[in-house]
Every structure is written in structure tokens, then in C-alpha cells.
Length: 187
Ligand code: SF4
Image (cartoon, rainbow, N blue to C red; front, side, top):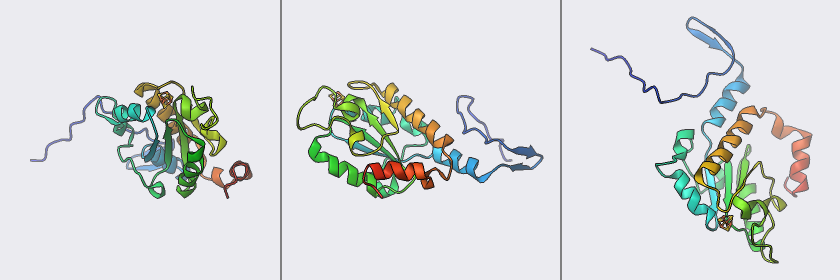
């Protein structure tokens, strides 16, 4: 005999998009379905250069478990990832490398600056350190802290999910977005 499926009450499922529901059918628009799928299947690319990267390791591990957000698939190929997570001190020499990684990512792509160093240079107000990665690539969310705790990284990640969910499918084709890319010398 087939057993009924048992769901654990603590497991939360992705919300159903707005639309019309009836017996045996549901109708919604394509944009809502795509944004729901994107939001819950973000593939991060960790670009970790120093101590904040250790916090990210804790964020990925079982206690905090980034996989709960549909992001267990961390990738190290820019071509397969859609969220660049920059963690650590970025020397000016690394700026072009970081930009190249960003450019190699397919659209749509998002960026989090994790920690004080990636966001602003942090305590390293020196000639050799980039004073914030937004000097070379656009940043969507900044996570404060030196280092930020895993909870803060998760909070930043959830902010990205909100952005992804709210983003229209045509934003990347808009003049405003093209102007933003051009301001960074990216076509
Ligand atoms: S923000 Fe602090 S913990 Fe993070 S990389 Fe910089 S010095 Fe290290």
C-alpha cells in the first residue's frame, strides 16, 4: 500500500507566486515564476582572499548551512555562477582580476561585498589596497563587519534574494543598467 507523504512542519517551501488558482490549475505570469526560481537557486562564486573567507566557510558548514536557501552548489567557474561573493582584502593588483571574473559571469549576475575590506578597504587605508570593490565592479549588497558573523553574511544573502525576487526580467536591457555598466567600462 502506498504511504501518504509526510512533511516535516519545520520545512518551509518556496512561496507560491501570486496568480489565479482553481481546482487542478494555477495561472500566473512568466516573470513571477522566473524570479521565484532565480531567488531560490542562486549559485555563489566565493572570491575569498583573506579572513572573511573563513567566516564564509562557517556559513557554508552544517550549523548555518547556506544550502537551506537553495545555494549549496558553490561554483568556482564564473560562467556557471550568478552571485559573486567578494570576501577579504582586495589589493589594487587584484582589481583587474576581480573585474575579469565579474565580466566572465553571465547575466543576470549579482555581487555582495562581504566585510569591511571588500566594502571599503577596511583597516587597510594604504597605497596598495583597493578602497572598496565598487571602484572596479558594481555592488548590490554590502555586509558590514570585520569580520561579519555568518548571520550577517546570511542576512546579506537574503537581501540579495529580495533583490533577485523583485527584479524585472527586462532590467538588464534598460538604458539605466547599460549606463551603469558603461560607467565601469563594461559593455
Ligand atoms: S574585514 Fe576584517 S576579517 Fe574581513 S578580510 Fe578584512 S581584516 Fe579580515
